[in-house]
Image 1: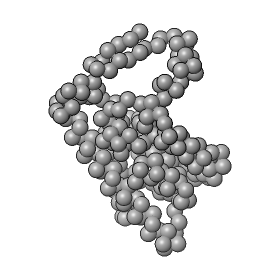
Image 2: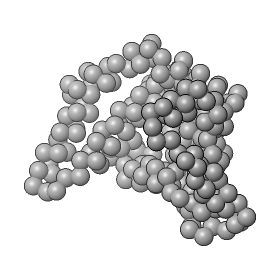
Image 3: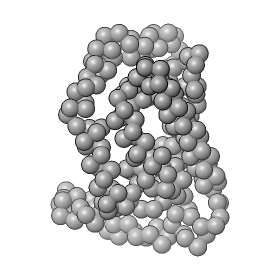
Length: 222
């Protein structure tokens, strides 16, 4: 079934046979991503691995992820984060403690699970947690959470100008302004993370293998 969203055509497949045709037989045809405003303003002009068009950069990004981020050797090197520190003492204990402290109040599990997941990811990528309060924190946990929440929301909104190109100069829903502001916030956050990482390396306190942070920043085109 073909639908028309403004100037964009969308094909809907509603059976296992069609899904196989999409993802196996004609997979190259759907590898590319639509050039939506979210990809332009929140992921460095489509340079994030989520938004690039199928081509040399997409292939390079996928290869980089598979060799530096998702290879068996790299994941094994961070097994202590997932098992020893998480399960035994730190992340899981903090997670359960938060639930216990709020025993007599309504608990939104989504928030707690998100915090747990993001703490694990940030420790693996950046070498430390950014969702906890500390004296020398470069950004508050509330700021990080808000930025990520806005990122997910703005990457999923229905932005009218994406489907009606001739009104591109208008920001009728205010989404473009929010996307630009969010992009600038992420720029400042990543810059401070890099500065902190460089300072710790100079001081001899290496907090994360270089390949992880370099790979992450290369994907963001910083």
